[in-house]
Structures are given as C-alpha cells and as structure tokens.
Image 1: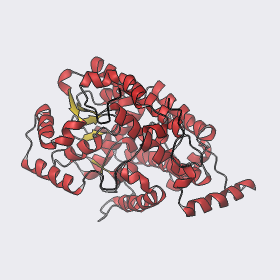
Image 2: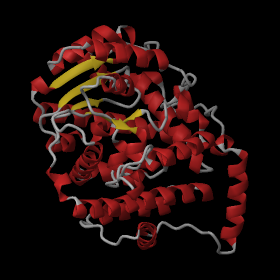
Image 3: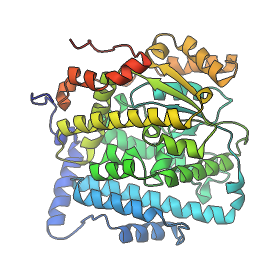
Image 4: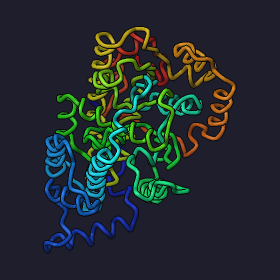
Length: 427
C-alpha cells in the first residue's frame, strides 16, 4: 500500500450547492423526527404497490437478497439525506417494475414462450474497452441491442403502447439531466444518454444482483454476499426482461442480441447456464491501468450520495475485486465454455486499428463484415471520439495503490494474454 496522503478532495467537494443546502435542511428535519429514510423492506414494498396499483409479485424469492442489501444500506452505506432519498426512489422503482412484470406476464403468457437466438456477449473488466466494442457491434443492424432507457425502465407503461415517443424514454431523459447535474464528472468515465446503446447491468439490478449497487453506495457486505451466492435467479430474470423488451419491440426471434457488462466477470457461470451457446468476446487491457481507472470510476460515482468516503478503501476494494473476477472468469472459461465459443481481443488492438480488430471479431462470429456494419461503426466513432466529454484522469497513489505492487499482483493475467503496458513499466 502507498503511505502517501490522497490528493483527492473530500466527498462533499463534489456536491452541488443546492444538494448541500438540501442535506442541511433534511438533517435538521431528521433531528426532530421528520423526513427520515430507513431502508425497511415492508415499507418499500407497500410504496411500490401503492404507486403501481398492483399487489402480486409472483415469485417472491428475491426478498432474501433484497433484505441483505437493505441491511447493508442501513449499516454500512453512510448515505447523506439526499443519497438516502435517491437510493430509496431507485429501490421502489425496481420493486414497482417487478409488480408490472408479473401483471404483464399474466396478461400475455406468450412472452415467456419467445425464443432468443444465442447472443454475442462482450465480457471484460470495466475500463477495458467493453463499451466501445459493444457499441461498435450494436452499429450492425444484424444485432439487437438495448437502449439506456430500456435498461432502466424495461417494462412498458400502459401509455407506451402506440406512443409516438415512449414515455419511459422521456422520463429517463429528464432523469439523466439530473444525474449529470449531480455528478458531471461521471460523463468522462462512461458516456450517458437515453438513446445510447447500453449494457444489461440495469436489468440485473432488477434481480437485486448488480454491481450498480456497490458503484452507487458503499455496501461491501452486500458485494461479498453476491460473490458468495449463486446469482442464477437474477440472470434468469434478466432473460425474462429481455423477452419483454423484445416482445414489445416485436423483434425477430432469430436476430441475436449483442450484450455486455463487466458484471459477467463475476457471474460468468450464471451467464453460461442461461445462454449456453453464447459467443463470448473477452477484452483485455493493462491490469494496472484498469484497476486505477475502475477505482476512479467507483470514487466518482460513490461521492455523490455520501459525505465521507476513504479513497484508499475504494482502491483496495477494486484491486481485490478485480483479482477475484479474473480468477473466476478463467476457471469458468476452462470448465464451462467450449473453445470455439471464446475469442480474446486486446484493448490495444481495437484502439490502434479498429477495422482489423473488428474483422477478426467477425471471423470468430462466422459473419461477413458488411458495408452497412463497417460504415455505421465508422460513423459512430466519428461522433464518439475518445475523451469527448473530457479525459478520465486519475492517479493510482490517490487510491493508496502502488503500481509495482499492482503489477506483481496481476502479472499472471498480463502474461497469460500478452497484454502490453499502457503505464510505465515498474522497475
């Protein structure tokens, strides 16, 4: 560990002045017993039922995992009053959607009978080029992909049917403006937009199994719980949500999805059990660069809703988590995935010569790289230049991490995939 003091400002330095004022007001109200937010499962479920006008969740096995999350939110998260309100709103939204899913499936049981073609799945550590590769592939009209608004609000509203513009999308456009106001630094880490191609981690969140929870709130106990318990139920629920989205859009059932989320590094066994014939593209990037970038990403997300956060804890947490994910992924690759369904791609290659890299991907998929696909990819790259929203800058030392120690820790991974150095090689 690095013994130097972090140069990062305290979490409160990232808060907009209206948020600071609102936190002061809410704390004053809390002190006299008003406007308090406790994460109580019964209260949250009653709120979701009231908002939706629905009662039936169907299978309620999700309650156990939700209970673990709520316990950690109450005991570990150290959320400020605004953070508590935002987190509560998110949890009620998810519960409301689960009620809506059950209602929809009762009305349209044929949704569950839909078949999905074996998907193409991009799997890699966060910050390893997964978003770029995912969005390049999504440019190909032969693949289905998710939009950001669909991952947050996957279940159609009654007003969605026949609407010129789905009210769910309008709702998310407004919400994203608020997100960008509250945390403008996030745009440099991950591009946001209601119509952006997006990963399915938001769908997994509906199973109360998502790294989003630990990116937005400090819940190490819940993160550990997810890693130690089989998350197949969340992946099966993700499949149901994909079927709902595809049914509402009237997608061709033989058209494959292109999916991605770093979450799959943690739960690759569940992904394979749900999609046994998936074609998986594994991305690889300098692990020292990845760990620092992931720590910075987590820091920039976490500071929004708390007044106190230790950057050294964030750095160690993501270094530890990265190592565990790498070992698990390799084990699952060797034990569960046929060699012909795996392909490895270096971040360096897709950054230096994306066309050659994509031709290799298409050869693996046994698909011709059509003119439409390559032209659309080129257009996407022209509009979405790297660092469009500002460069993502960080220093390993700010997270208590030493480059040489991290290099030694992840040497097994670099050597296995011949990953080139992006940072100065430690001596």
